[in-house]
Image (cartoon, rainbow, N blue to C red):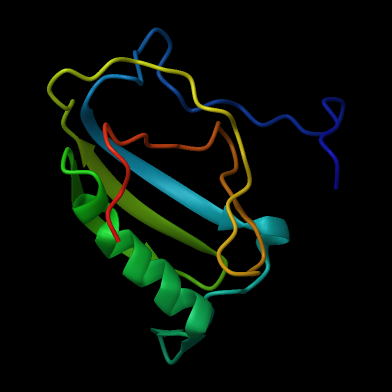
Length: 130
């Protein structure tokens, strides 16, 4: 469904006046497009990851390898979204820059999108390895 301000009244949970470009611990939620169950299923209270869920898990764990200034906190993958804590330490000599918003795809997988606020796009000071 396309955004309609007359029926969609989503309130921002961002702190007014806070500079989100600075380092700190950030709780993020990433949802699948149309909230489709793409990452697996819950069986008897346990999350069973499918191939896409395993990719999400693996890619989350590689974030700190790609960007040395990112530390990973706890995370949980659910059938149609994931939660995680990213601790971002400003890299030495980093400058703020604006990133284009884009939909991320992984080898033909359905797109993931972040709902409720702009997507978090991290820019390394050098290209990621691997």
